[in-house]
Length: 625
Image (cartoon, rainbow, N blue to C red; front, side, top):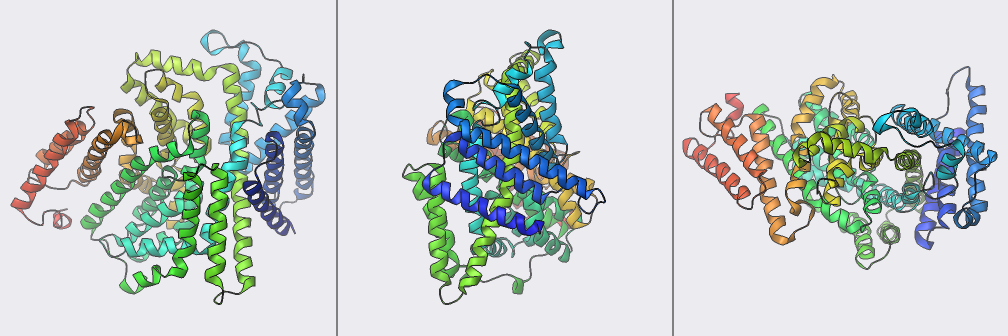
């Protein structure tokens, strides 16, 4: 019964998103309160307290109480939104009670959805806001009583009902629905077949296929961990079946799925949040993310290639690879092309992002119905559409709960001023050195991001750490891209590398060797953020020459870093080879127009020497190792 109720509610949420994307959202507070009430209710159905336990009857009462408290609070906002926005009312005891109940519901659902780490951070933020005036020195702040905190959190649009929940209930929701329809109407299988065709026949074909497939899926999903769990159940067994080492198979899937969070158009939903925080267009953020994401995937591909040559990893069997005519059948491609065409048409014609997503969905559904006529029963088509709505509704639970919790934390950070204080301390500690500030911020981002989903991790580090970079002269977009990258790659960075944990579980191997392989495969990702600070062209700024300079530098690193880690020979002298690779990497990171050319020349000379000395030096590496 509970599963049926969850399915019905999830489909209803999907329809709610579809309607508000087409007709426009309700009044701001109404839209956000309705959305939060719906996702908290669905979370209670999907993640019940103490399922199968003897205490379940008591747990049902608690679940019901949390849902009722949530709807009382959300209903109060819906009925009084005009008064709240125009009169700025003083908080009463009833307001405090509703705020406490709603916050508890959000925290408890957050605990069930993603574990203890994130709710604990929110609790720390609340306790700091209420008791931080007792802390002496720079970390202390002015006293705020519960009524003032209630007015900040509940009776306005800067607390729970702030911009993050606004984005979750409109733009992100529309794109989650877009992705669900794309995958459930044949796009998912098309992505998988395309990945198999492109990567399957070269050395390490299964790993390359996994990289492409997981990247394509990750680009339209909101979670690296969820992506590992989805595509990993296909790609990891395939790699193991071809005798790939289990830790390597797990690492490939974890890294590729994480890369999907760094790539447009959704970037784990962070693209929309970043655009809102920075006050720039979504297109600006999307364009800024293209080159870094491209370099990331090129580096993973290169690393997989050299490792495959060294270990003589098998290609995918020819009979398992679909033919190009099968993949490129117009019936398969038309819905995907219609979806993407509608989306970009909406964006390029200046429509709102959620309206553009709706145009993409509408075009997709029309194309899907057209190509299905005569080959698919109406009931089967309806089931696919309902499955997409269900999937989208369920996917919005984690996003809605997390961003509501993140908005509470951000509100407390802004109220107390702790973000500015910590940024000032970092700048003081680093002595205004951009390099030292960047290193400190990067390390803290990795630690803060451990165990958190992409969007929640980004919101937290953007509020606390991005100001430290802008304080030493880094442009806002570059600063936010920097912290976003480091917060995101925490899911593959030991010790709390949750994407690796999930992939290792599927591969039935120990997580530690899988984590080592993941760090090697994703080594370029730890360098890309620094390139964003060094080369404005990395994020599409500075004109064509700057972009070309950034691209050449990135290509040097794409080759040098994997070859260095794989100990690929050039001159026949290992020490000299290592020195050449390191020199090329260092020079490529020097902020000078001639540096990328010089670094590329080093690699070219090394390649020329290797070719003269032994034409197949690279291919023979496996036997040498």
